[in-house]
Length: 386
Ligand SMILES: Cc1ncc(COP(=O)(O)O)c(CNc2conc2O)c1O
Image 1 (tube, helix red, strand yellow):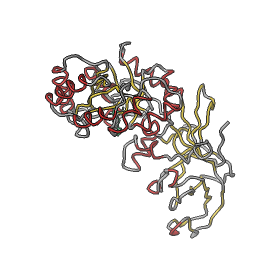
Image 2 (image 1 turned 120 degrees about the vertical axis):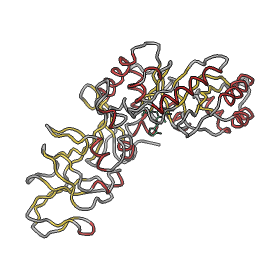
Image 3 (image 1 turned 90 degrees about the horizontal axis):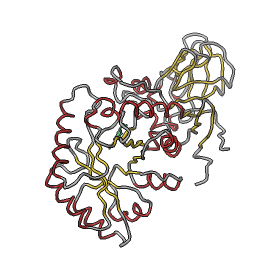
Image 4 (image 1 turned 180 degrees about the vertical axis):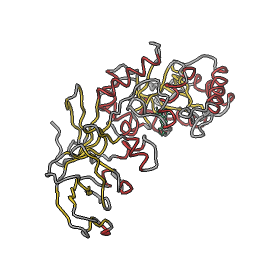
Protein backbone atom coordinates (compact mmCIF):
# COMPACT_ATOMS: atom_id res chain seq x y z
CA UNK A 1 0.00 0.00 0.00
CA UNK A 2 1.63 3.29 -1.05
CA UNK A 3 2.55 5.32 2.01
CA UNK A 4 3.96 8.74 2.73
CA UNK A 5 6.34 9.86 5.45
CA UNK A 6 5.50 13.54 5.96
CA UNK A 7 2.27 14.48 7.68
CA UNK A 8 0.87 16.62 4.86
CA UNK A 9 -1.68 15.19 2.42
CA UNK A 10 -4.68 15.99 0.20
CA UNK A 11 -7.90 14.03 0.49
CA UNK A 12 -9.99 13.40 -2.66
CA UNK A 13 -13.54 12.49 -1.75
CA UNK A 14 -14.78 10.20 -4.52
CA UNK A 15 -18.23 10.04 -2.91
CA UNK A 16 -18.58 13.78 -3.47
CA UNK A 17 -17.25 13.41 -7.04
CA UNK A 18 -19.84 10.71 -7.74
CA UNK A 19 -22.66 12.75 -6.21
CA UNK A 20 -21.63 15.80 -8.26
CA UNK A 21 -21.64 13.77 -11.50
CA UNK A 22 -25.00 12.17 -10.73
CA UNK A 23 -26.54 15.54 -9.86
CA UNK A 24 -25.19 17.13 -13.05
CA UNK A 25 -26.45 14.18 -15.15
CA UNK A 26 -29.87 14.49 -13.53
CA UNK A 27 -29.86 18.22 -14.33
CA UNK A 28 -29.08 17.46 -18.00
CA UNK A 29 -31.89 14.91 -17.85
CA UNK A 30 -31.42 13.27 -21.25
CA UNK A 31 -29.92 9.82 -21.34
CA UNK A 32 -28.41 10.04 -24.80
CA UNK A 33 -26.36 13.06 -23.66
CA UNK A 34 -22.71 12.00 -23.45
CA UNK A 35 -20.67 13.57 -20.63
CA UNK A 36 -16.92 13.99 -20.96
CA UNK A 37 -15.14 14.39 -17.63
CA UNK A 38 -12.41 17.00 -18.06
CA UNK A 39 -9.41 15.45 -16.29
CA UNK A 40 -6.62 17.57 -17.76
CA UNK A 41 -3.88 18.96 -15.50
CA UNK A 42 -3.93 15.78 -13.40
CA UNK A 43 -7.72 16.23 -13.03
CA UNK A 44 -7.26 19.82 -11.83
CA UNK A 45 -4.83 18.45 -9.24
CA UNK A 46 -7.21 15.73 -8.00
CA UNK A 47 -5.35 12.80 -9.64
CA UNK A 48 -6.31 12.01 -13.25
CA UNK A 49 -6.36 8.19 -13.25
CA UNK A 50 -8.33 7.88 -10.01
CA UNK A 51 -10.80 10.60 -11.04
CA UNK A 52 -11.16 9.07 -14.51
CA UNK A 53 -11.96 5.62 -13.06
CA UNK A 54 -14.46 7.03 -10.55
CA UNK A 55 -16.09 9.30 -13.14
CA UNK A 56 -16.53 6.42 -15.60
CA UNK A 57 -18.02 4.31 -12.81
CA UNK A 58 -20.39 7.20 -12.07
CA UNK A 59 -21.59 7.12 -15.68
CA UNK A 60 -19.54 9.59 -17.71
CA UNK A 61 -19.04 8.62 -21.36
CA UNK A 62 -15.44 9.66 -21.85
CA UNK A 63 -12.56 11.88 -20.77
CA UNK A 64 -11.04 15.12 -22.01
CA UNK A 65 -7.42 16.15 -21.52
CA UNK A 66 -5.22 19.06 -22.61
CA UNK A 67 -2.51 17.32 -24.66
CA UNK A 68 -1.46 13.92 -26.00
CA UNK A 69 0.86 12.96 -23.12
CA UNK A 70 -2.07 13.13 -20.69
CA UNK A 71 -4.17 10.91 -22.95
CA UNK A 72 -1.43 8.29 -23.43
CA UNK A 73 -0.79 8.31 -19.68
CA UNK A 74 -4.46 7.45 -19.01
CA UNK A 75 -4.36 4.67 -21.64
CA UNK A 76 -1.20 3.26 -19.99
CA UNK A 77 -3.12 3.43 -16.71
CA UNK A 78 -5.76 1.13 -18.22
CA UNK A 79 -8.44 3.58 -19.32
CA UNK A 80 -10.30 2.23 -22.38
CA UNK A 81 -13.12 4.80 -22.63
CA UNK A 82 -13.07 7.55 -25.30
CA UNK A 83 -10.41 10.21 -24.66
CA UNK A 84 -10.36 13.57 -26.43
CA UNK A 85 -7.30 15.84 -26.52
CA UNK A 86 -8.73 19.37 -26.32
CA UNK A 87 -5.56 21.23 -27.23
CA UNK A 88 -3.20 21.23 -30.19
CA UNK A 89 -1.06 18.20 -31.07
CA UNK A 90 1.97 17.94 -33.34
CA UNK A 91 1.24 16.66 -36.87
CA UNK A 92 4.20 14.28 -36.59
CA UNK A 93 2.67 12.62 -33.49
CA UNK A 94 -0.62 11.53 -35.05
CA UNK A 95 0.36 7.85 -35.24
CA UNK A 96 0.71 7.82 -31.47
CA UNK A 97 -2.86 9.10 -31.20
CA UNK A 98 -4.03 6.46 -33.65
CA UNK A 99 -2.13 3.67 -31.87
CA UNK A 100 -3.70 4.59 -28.52
CA UNK A 101 -7.13 5.28 -30.03
CA UNK A 102 -7.12 8.87 -28.78
CA UNK A 103 -9.22 11.54 -30.51
CA UNK A 104 -7.44 14.76 -31.46
CA UNK A 105 -8.61 18.31 -32.01
CA UNK A 106 -8.05 19.79 -35.49
CA UNK A 107 -8.57 23.33 -36.66
CA UNK A 108 -6.00 23.99 -39.39
CA UNK A 109 -5.97 22.71 -42.99
CA UNK A 110 -2.16 22.83 -43.26
CA UNK A 111 -1.87 20.77 -40.06
CA UNK A 112 -4.27 18.19 -41.52
CA UNK A 113 -2.25 18.00 -44.74
CA UNK A 114 0.98 17.59 -42.76
CA UNK A 115 -0.67 15.00 -40.50
CA UNK A 116 -1.92 12.93 -43.45
CA UNK A 117 1.70 12.65 -44.68
CA UNK A 118 2.74 11.09 -41.36
CA UNK A 119 -0.17 8.67 -40.92
CA UNK A 120 0.63 5.00 -41.50
CA UNK A 121 -1.62 3.33 -44.11
CA UNK A 122 -3.53 1.35 -41.44
CA UNK A 123 -3.85 4.29 -39.04
CA UNK A 124 -7.27 5.56 -37.98
CA UNK A 125 -7.28 9.11 -36.63
CA UNK A 126 -10.46 10.39 -34.96
CA UNK A 127 -10.80 14.15 -35.16
CA UNK A 128 -12.95 16.75 -33.46
CA UNK A 129 -13.01 20.04 -35.37
CA UNK A 130 -12.58 23.04 -33.07
CA UNK A 131 -14.52 26.18 -33.93
CA UNK A 132 -13.38 29.47 -32.46
CA UNK A 133 -16.70 31.32 -32.09
CA UNK A 134 -15.25 33.94 -29.76
CA UNK A 135 -12.88 32.34 -27.23
CA UNK A 136 -9.99 33.55 -29.37
CA UNK A 137 -7.71 30.65 -28.43
CA UNK A 138 -7.62 27.90 -31.10
CA UNK A 139 -10.19 27.04 -33.79
CA UNK A 140 -11.52 27.86 -37.21
CA UNK A 141 -13.35 31.14 -37.46
CA UNK A 142 -15.44 30.89 -40.62
CA UNK A 143 -17.93 28.54 -42.26
CA UNK A 144 -15.98 28.27 -45.50
CA UNK A 145 -12.81 27.30 -43.58
CA UNK A 146 -14.99 24.58 -42.03
CA UNK A 147 -16.26 23.41 -45.44
CA UNK A 148 -12.67 23.10 -46.73
CA UNK A 149 -11.59 21.14 -43.66
CA UNK A 150 -14.67 18.90 -43.77
CA UNK A 151 -14.10 17.95 -47.41
CA UNK A 152 -10.36 17.43 -46.87
CA UNK A 153 -11.02 15.08 -43.93
CA UNK A 154 -13.48 13.09 -46.03
CA UNK A 155 -10.82 12.78 -48.76
CA UNK A 156 -8.30 11.02 -46.48
CA UNK A 157 -9.26 7.43 -45.61
CA UNK A 158 -7.35 7.36 -42.29
CA UNK A 159 -9.24 10.43 -40.98
CA UNK A 160 -12.61 10.16 -39.25
CA UNK A 161 -14.51 13.34 -38.41
CA UNK A 162 -15.84 12.18 -35.06
CA UNK A 163 -16.87 15.53 -33.62
CA UNK A 164 -17.17 19.28 -33.81
CA UNK A 165 -17.05 21.67 -30.87
CA UNK A 166 -16.60 25.18 -29.58
CA UNK A 167 -15.78 26.71 -26.17
CA UNK A 168 -17.43 29.65 -24.42
CA UNK A 169 -15.51 32.57 -22.95
CA UNK A 170 -18.29 33.93 -20.71
CA UNK A 171 -20.63 31.05 -19.84
CA UNK A 172 -19.93 31.65 -16.13
CA UNK A 173 -21.27 35.22 -16.33
CA UNK A 174 -24.96 35.96 -15.87
CA UNK A 175 -25.03 38.33 -18.87
CA UNK A 176 -25.52 35.98 -21.84
CA UNK A 177 -24.94 38.51 -24.63
CA UNK A 178 -21.52 37.23 -25.69
CA UNK A 179 -22.45 33.58 -25.15
CA UNK A 180 -25.53 33.98 -27.38
CA UNK A 181 -23.29 35.44 -30.10
CA UNK A 182 -20.93 32.46 -29.82
CA UNK A 183 -23.81 29.98 -29.86
CA UNK A 184 -25.24 31.71 -32.92
CA UNK A 185 -21.92 31.43 -34.76
CA UNK A 186 -21.59 27.77 -33.79
CA UNK A 187 -25.09 27.01 -35.12
CA UNK A 188 -24.22 28.82 -38.38
CA UNK A 189 -21.16 26.60 -38.74
CA UNK A 190 -23.09 23.43 -37.96
CA UNK A 191 -25.59 24.39 -40.67
CA UNK A 192 -22.99 24.22 -43.46
CA UNK A 193 -21.82 20.68 -42.61
CA UNK A 194 -22.82 17.93 -45.04
CA UNK A 195 -23.61 15.75 -42.03
CA UNK A 196 -23.33 16.13 -38.29
CA UNK A 197 -20.53 14.04 -36.73
CA UNK A 198 -21.15 11.72 -33.77
CA UNK A 199 -20.20 14.29 -31.14
CA UNK A 200 -21.44 17.89 -31.23
CA UNK A 201 -20.42 19.71 -28.06
CA UNK A 202 -19.96 23.22 -26.76
CA UNK A 203 -20.65 23.44 -23.05
CA UNK A 204 -18.31 23.60 -20.10
CA UNK A 205 -19.67 23.33 -16.53
CA UNK A 206 -21.18 26.82 -16.53
CA UNK A 207 -23.03 26.27 -19.82
CA UNK A 208 -24.13 22.79 -18.73
CA UNK A 209 -25.64 24.27 -15.58
CA UNK A 210 -27.14 27.44 -17.08
CA UNK A 211 -27.81 27.06 -20.81
CA UNK A 212 -29.60 23.90 -22.02
CA UNK A 213 -29.49 25.06 -25.67
CA UNK A 214 -25.70 24.70 -25.57
CA UNK A 215 -25.82 21.00 -24.66
CA UNK A 216 -26.16 19.48 -28.15
CA UNK A 217 -25.35 15.76 -27.69
CA UNK A 218 -22.20 15.89 -25.53
CA UNK A 219 -20.90 18.06 -22.71
CA UNK A 220 -17.47 18.68 -21.18
CA UNK A 221 -17.59 19.01 -17.40
CA UNK A 222 -14.62 19.95 -15.27
CA UNK A 223 -14.96 22.35 -12.37
CA UNK A 224 -18.50 21.39 -11.30
CA UNK A 225 -17.51 17.70 -11.15
CA UNK A 226 -14.90 18.72 -8.57
CA UNK A 227 -17.68 20.42 -6.61
CA UNK A 228 -16.58 23.98 -7.32
CA UNK A 229 -18.67 26.81 -8.70
CA UNK A 230 -17.57 28.00 -12.19
CA UNK A 231 -17.63 31.59 -10.90
CA UNK A 232 -18.61 33.64 -7.86
CA UNK A 233 -21.40 35.22 -9.96
CA UNK A 234 -22.91 31.78 -10.56
CA UNK A 235 -22.59 30.64 -6.97
CA UNK A 236 -25.99 32.12 -6.02
CA UNK A 237 -27.78 30.51 -8.94
CA UNK A 238 -26.30 26.98 -9.06
CA UNK A 239 -29.14 24.65 -10.12
CA UNK A 240 -27.55 21.63 -8.42
CA UNK A 241 -25.77 21.16 -5.08
CA UNK A 242 -21.98 20.85 -5.47
CA UNK A 243 -19.75 19.22 -2.85
CA UNK A 244 -16.03 20.07 -2.78
CA UNK A 245 -13.94 17.01 -3.61
CA UNK A 246 -10.51 18.32 -2.58
CA UNK A 247 -9.27 18.99 0.98
CA UNK A 248 -5.79 19.53 2.43
CA UNK A 249 -4.37 18.60 5.83
CA UNK A 250 -1.17 18.63 7.86
CA UNK A 251 -0.11 18.00 11.45
CA UNK A 252 1.82 20.05 14.02
CA UNK A 253 5.45 18.88 14.06
CA UNK A 254 6.57 21.36 16.72
CA UNK A 255 4.91 23.69 19.23
CA UNK A 256 6.46 26.28 21.52
CA UNK A 257 5.49 29.21 23.72
CA UNK A 258 7.19 32.46 22.70
CA UNK A 259 7.42 35.72 24.63
CA UNK A 260 6.37 39.23 23.61
CA UNK A 261 9.05 40.54 21.23
CA UNK A 262 10.12 37.09 19.93
CA UNK A 263 10.25 36.75 16.11
CA UNK A 264 9.07 34.13 13.65
CA UNK A 265 10.47 33.01 10.25
CA UNK A 266 12.62 34.56 7.54
CA UNK A 267 13.17 38.29 7.76
CA UNK A 268 12.03 38.06 11.40
CA UNK A 269 8.98 39.96 10.14
CA UNK A 270 6.52 38.58 12.71
CA UNK A 271 6.95 39.74 16.30
CA UNK A 272 4.85 38.34 19.12
CA UNK A 273 3.00 41.17 20.86
CA UNK A 274 2.48 39.02 23.93
CA UNK A 275 3.23 35.50 25.10
CA UNK A 276 1.72 33.07 22.59
CA UNK A 277 1.89 29.50 21.42
CA UNK A 278 3.26 28.83 17.93
CA UNK A 279 2.86 25.64 15.88
CA UNK A 280 4.99 24.55 12.93
CA UNK A 281 3.54 22.50 10.06
CA UNK A 282 5.45 20.67 7.27
CA UNK A 283 4.00 22.41 4.22
CA UNK A 284 5.49 25.29 2.26
CA UNK A 285 5.59 27.03 -1.08
CA UNK A 286 7.24 24.03 -2.81
CA UNK A 287 3.96 22.19 -2.10
CA UNK A 288 2.02 24.97 -3.78
CA UNK A 289 1.14 26.53 -0.43
CA UNK A 290 2.58 29.76 -1.78
CA UNK A 291 4.05 32.70 0.17
CA UNK A 292 1.07 34.97 -0.55
CA UNK A 293 -0.90 32.71 1.82
CA UNK A 294 0.87 34.32 4.79
CA UNK A 295 -1.90 35.47 7.13
CA UNK A 296 -4.41 32.88 5.82
CA UNK A 297 -6.26 31.13 8.63
CA UNK A 298 -6.10 27.35 9.02
CA UNK A 299 -8.17 25.29 11.46
CA UNK A 300 -6.55 23.55 14.42
CA UNK A 301 -8.45 22.07 17.35
CA UNK A 302 -11.62 23.32 15.63
CA UNK A 303 -10.48 26.95 15.78
CA UNK A 304 -9.32 29.29 13.01
CA UNK A 305 -5.63 30.15 13.46
CA UNK A 306 -3.54 32.49 11.25
CA UNK A 307 -0.31 31.60 9.48
CA UNK A 308 2.27 33.97 11.00
CA UNK A 309 5.57 35.05 9.47
CA UNK A 310 6.87 34.19 6.04
CA UNK A 311 5.95 30.81 4.49
CA UNK A 312 9.11 28.77 3.89
CA UNK A 313 9.79 26.23 1.13
CA UNK A 314 8.71 23.24 3.22
CA UNK A 315 7.28 24.63 6.47
CA UNK A 316 5.22 27.43 7.92
CA UNK A 317 4.15 28.60 11.35
CA UNK A 318 0.72 29.25 12.84
CA UNK A 319 -0.37 31.11 15.94
CA UNK A 320 -2.16 28.54 18.11
CA UNK A 321 -5.37 29.30 20.01
CA UNK A 322 -4.03 27.40 23.03
CA UNK A 323 -1.15 25.11 23.99
CA UNK A 324 -1.35 22.03 21.72
CA UNK A 325 0.77 18.94 21.27
CA UNK A 326 2.71 17.86 18.15
CA UNK A 327 0.67 15.49 15.99
CA UNK A 328 -2.47 17.63 16.27
CA UNK A 329 -4.25 17.69 12.87
CA UNK A 330 -4.37 20.99 10.94
CA UNK A 331 -7.02 21.63 8.26
CA UNK A 332 -5.71 23.93 5.51
CA UNK A 333 -8.63 23.32 3.10
CA UNK A 334 -11.76 21.57 4.32
CA UNK A 335 -14.09 21.29 7.30
CA UNK A 336 -13.19 20.75 10.93
CA UNK A 337 -16.09 20.82 13.35
CA UNK A 338 -18.16 23.87 12.56
CA UNK A 339 -15.29 25.68 10.88
CA UNK A 340 -14.41 25.33 7.19
CA UNK A 341 -11.82 26.82 4.87
CA UNK A 342 -13.11 26.48 1.32
CA UNK A 343 -11.12 26.50 -1.90
CA UNK A 344 -13.04 29.69 -2.74
CA UNK A 345 -11.65 31.32 0.43
CA UNK A 346 -8.08 30.43 -0.57
CA UNK A 347 -8.73 31.66 -4.13
CA UNK A 348 -10.05 34.93 -2.71
CA UNK A 349 -6.98 35.36 -0.52
CA UNK A 350 -4.75 34.80 -3.59
CA UNK A 351 -6.93 37.04 -5.82
CA UNK A 352 -7.38 34.18 -8.30
CA UNK A 353 -10.10 31.68 -9.27
CA UNK A 354 -10.91 28.39 -7.56
CA UNK A 355 -9.70 26.36 -10.61
CA UNK A 356 -6.10 27.32 -9.85
CA UNK A 357 -5.96 26.18 -6.23
CA UNK A 358 -6.06 22.37 -6.46
CA UNK A 359 -3.94 22.61 -9.64
CA UNK A 360 -1.03 24.25 -7.81
CA UNK A 361 -0.88 21.79 -4.89
CA UNK A 362 2.23 20.03 -6.18
CA UNK A 363 2.95 16.36 -6.83
CA UNK A 364 5.01 16.36 -3.62
CA UNK A 365 1.75 16.25 -1.67
CA UNK A 366 0.31 12.71 -1.60
CA UNK A 367 -3.38 12.21 -2.42
CA UNK A 368 -5.57 9.94 -0.29
CA UNK A 369 -8.77 8.76 -2.03
CA UNK A 370 -11.86 8.41 0.11
CA UNK A 371 -14.81 6.17 -0.80
CA UNK A 372 -17.73 5.36 1.51
CA UNK A 373 -16.01 7.60 4.02
CA UNK A 374 -12.89 5.42 4.15
CA UNK A 375 -9.38 5.76 2.59
CA UNK A 376 -9.20 3.32 -0.35
CA UNK A 377 -6.00 4.38 -2.13
CA UNK A 378 -2.95 6.59 -1.66
CA UNK A 379 -0.82 8.04 -4.47
CA UNK A 380 2.63 9.39 -3.68
CA UNK A 381 4.56 10.49 -6.78
CA UNK A 382 7.84 10.44 -4.83
CA UNK A 383 7.62 6.75 -3.99
CA UNK A 384 5.63 5.26 -6.89
CA UNK A 385 7.87 3.67 -9.53
CA UNK A 386 8.29 5.63 -12.77
C1 LIG B 1 -12.08 23.24 -24.17
C2 LIG B 1 -12.52 23.07 -22.74
N1 LIG B 1 -13.66 22.39 -22.49
C3 LIG B 1 -14.11 22.21 -21.23
C4 LIG B 1 -13.42 22.71 -20.17
C5 LIG B 1 -13.97 22.47 -18.78
O1 LIG B 1 -14.38 23.70 -18.23
P1 LIG B 1 -14.99 23.72 -16.75
O2 LIG B 1 -13.87 23.23 -15.84
O3 LIG B 1 -15.34 25.15 -16.53
O4 LIG B 1 -16.16 22.79 -16.76
C6 LIG B 1 -12.24 23.44 -20.37
C7 LIG B 1 -11.52 23.99 -19.17
N2 LIG B 1 -10.46 24.85 -19.47
C8 LIG B 1 -9.95 25.68 -18.55
C9 LIG B 1 -10.27 25.80 -17.24
O5 LIG B 1 -9.48 26.81 -16.75
N3 LIG B 1 -8.70 27.31 -17.73
C10 LIG B 1 -8.97 26.62 -18.84
O6 LIG B 1 -8.44 26.79 -20.01
C11 LIG B 1 -11.77 23.62 -21.69
O7 LIG B 1 -10.64 24.31 -21.96
